[in-house]
Length: 178
Image (tube, rainbow, N blue to C red; front, side, top):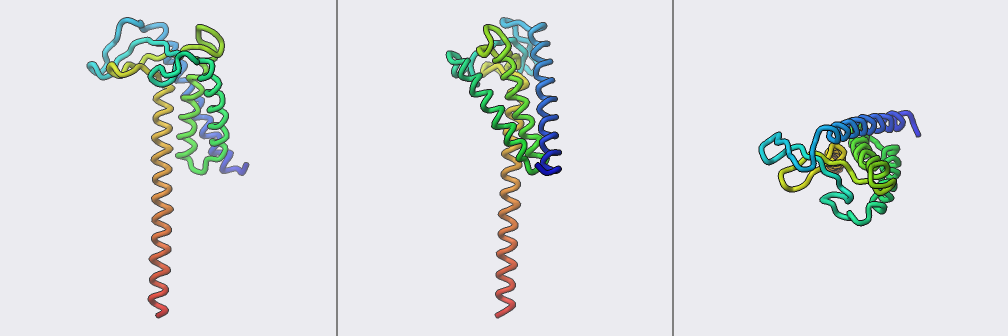
């Protein structure tokens, strides 16, 4: 791995570590201060704080196969780590770091939270109206995916513009030669 890629990998890992620390600290605070029955309103009915334990994935999908979600989480973390070693831009490294941090944050719950090792329920506390309850690992995952998409579209647009510029220059050269 060249020095630039190594620096970008380090950036991704630092972002992931910060995301994991924030996620785990906020989950610990939620466990000690929030209730599963009472909601603290932050922005009217749109956003609040309420403790929940999610055995499944997003919107509690797969709640009967938590062990499988844990295995998928481990696989995803490995793939994201590999992708982070291949990051070519700082934005990609940050995006992958956010995704990695979010994945590891929820994987920690799956591995170590009750009811059992590898079948733990994810601690959630950010109540989005009556839609769902999530956590900061979910926010990091979502932000990382959005940032990665923006970077991908930006790079494609730049590459497309470069191709268009080359075509225009080639066309100009042909016209001058005639």
